[in-house]
Amino acid sequence: MKNVLLIAEQVFLEKFSIKKTFVYIFFMILSSLLAFKLGVGTVNSNSFVDKFAGLVSNYFIIGLFWIAGIPFIIYIGSITISAIAKEINDGTAMLIFTRPIMRREFLLGKLSGILAYTTTINLVIIYIFASMAAILYGSDITITNGIYRAATSIFIYSFLLTIFILSFSLFLSAYITKNIVNMTILFVLILMIFVMPIVLTNTPKMNNYQEKLPDFAFIFGSTAIESLNVMGLDLIYYNKDLMASSIGVYKKYYTDIYIPQYVKEPIRINEIKLLPLTIIILIISLILLFLSYIKLNSLEIQ
Image 1 (cartoon, rainbow, N blue to C red):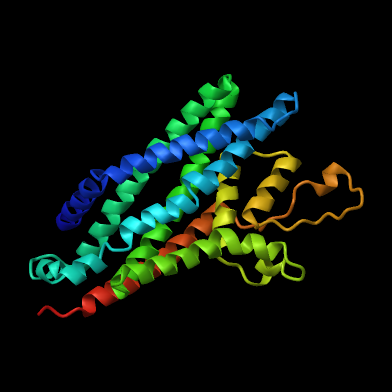
Image 2: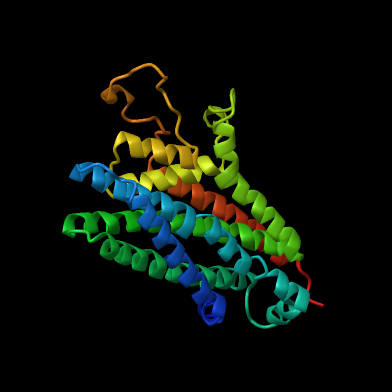
């Protein structure tokens, strides 16, 4: 356990000291605030309930695709993809394994250090974003409370996504030593989570594919929405539809003919709650880490 903490501390300090950390934090906060301000401007209703729901939903979607979306996956993937491969290519992995350090300690140390780093910067970005958004919007205490609950929802989703992406990236790093190949595979994963579902759900005869073949987008899209529900942030119909079109996980039951609002509410998503989704993500992550350990354990000291 001591070796795990030592490796984790070294990795955390190494990653946190790099300049791109601060560039990433600045970019994410600035771009998210700009998009948030524009999103809030589209809420035209004078109703407090509608304005509150619109504020939270726009905030959530922006957070989903910016703070915990494609830029986030690319960033943490880029700093994790070479975590093991670089050590193997440079020969330092073999040197480390000649010392009284078990290979599972090496793997867990890498995972813990990067997880601590990404969790820290996510906490900083998400809650600074939430605070600045409340100030820019001039929110009262009730809406500010809703913003922070939305921020917590985003963080829950982001933390689970982080665990999966780190496990997947470490798995790639253990088996493939070429960074260009690893990054290509990572981009394919990004397409599977964020892009392909939106295309497929808007394609005739394919819009219900997730009922028969749940994918990563189904799992993580459901996790994002369930984390919102856990924080008690229920959205009005319009904003659920807006989120549905962005995530590509919902199935619309209504047609073009008139249907009363109470019949259309809510749009159907899967009935999986947050706890089973969390267990599924953790099981997938543990399998990836176990396979990474098997690969490390097969390396022979020369």
